[in-house]
Structure formats: structure tokens, C-alpha cells
Amino acid sequence: MSIFNFHYVTIAEPRQSFFMELERLFNRVCADPKCPFSESAAWWWSYKPFQPLPHEPVIWLLESAGDSLIKKVYGDQPGKAGLTKVRGNKGNISEIYLDHRANQGATAQAKMAFHELMHNKLQKGDELHTESTGLGRERFELRPFGDDLMFDDIRLMAPVLDKPVRQYAGSYS
Image 1: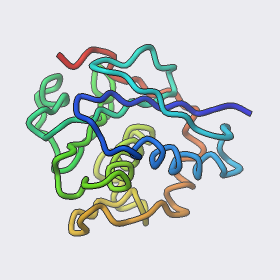
Image 2: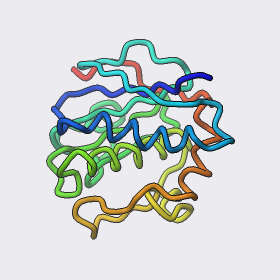
Image 3: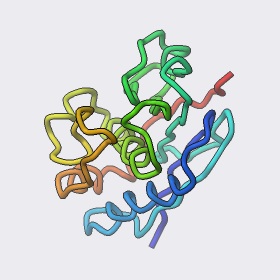
């Protein structure tokens, strides 16, 4: 079977086990029978993703909302703990801000990254927050991001992991 690759660009350094935590979440999706992949793998880049395939999403890890790539590229205001710009003319951008209180610790950072990549792969804005029971919800009253991956999240994500979604391919600078 094949491997689902996702990419992350580190402008700021995440917690040590962030990568394993994010792979763990995607591997749970890959275990679903409707998913065309059998496992996931993370690819790390600095400042610019290197040629992801059309179905492979990219998450940008930034120190703070003040570093927002979405603001630089699209002029949109950054989110609270993270944000995804979908259907932009230069491609999707998903980003999380490591200094936000909801993103403290590797597990919280991985959950927030997964949440933003749900927006990315599903091509959904805030309407995602009402369609999901777990990581798809926006729950900032929980510090850190406290929900877990639920059946609804897996049901939404499993069949779309192989669907092409245009990603921003420029550099951070």
C-alpha cells in the first residue's frame, strides 16, 4: 500500500515529538478502509516546501501570528492559534502559531496542525467547525487544544487524502 506524505515548513521550532504526534493522527485516518493510503510520513523543510505532490498538504510552523504567511501573501488577518486560507489564487496556506497558549506542547501543536490541515484538504473555512465533533471543531476555551481525533474527523478526511489541493509554493521570505 502507499504512504500519505504531508509537509511542514519550520520558521519556528516545534516541540520535540510534534512530528511523531502528527504522524500518529494521520495514521489513524490512514487505517480507515475508505482511505487510499496505509500510513503517513512527515517531510520537513526550511523556508520553502520542496515540490509536494498535488495531493500533499503543507503546514507552516510560525513563532507567532505576527509572522503570518497568510497576511504576507493574501493580506488577510492571521488567526488566533492558527489559520488556513483555502481557495486562494496562489494556493492554500495552513499555518499555526507556536506561541499561542492553545499550542503549548507537542500534542497540542500536532492537534492544531491537523485541524488546519483538515481545513486545507476539505477546502472548508469556518463551516468545518460545525461539521465535526473532534479536532475539526474550534475549541480555544480548552488550553491547550484539548479535543481528540474522532470518528467524524476520520470520516471526513479518509476519502480526501488523495484529492489534489493546490498549495502555496513560494518561500517564506
